[in-house]
Image 1 (spheres, rainbow, N blue to C red):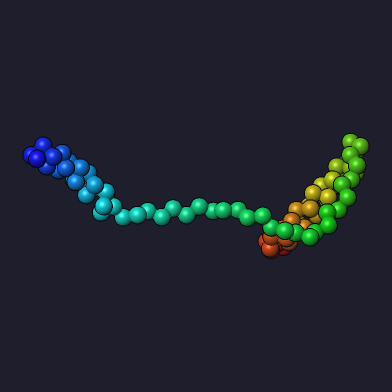
Image 2: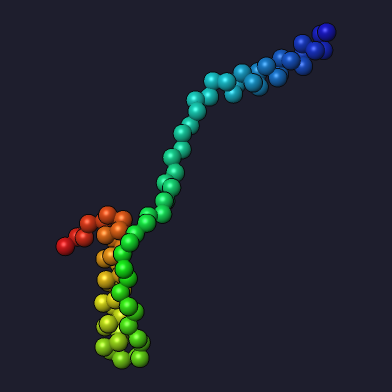
Length: 77
């Protein structure tokens, strides 16, 4: 009986130390997919010329603008 009390004393002290700990809440950002009905423009052909690279950059800017409109980000203009 005395051995049982000696065994329960450390166990009680261990569990007592955990009982008074305040719970910690950790918030994590969760990204959610957004349905967008935007029609993407046709991608220009790349023939290596300056005009082709310029057309490709205009294409990327239009795509970026469409996607920003889908998620509701206002342009900084």
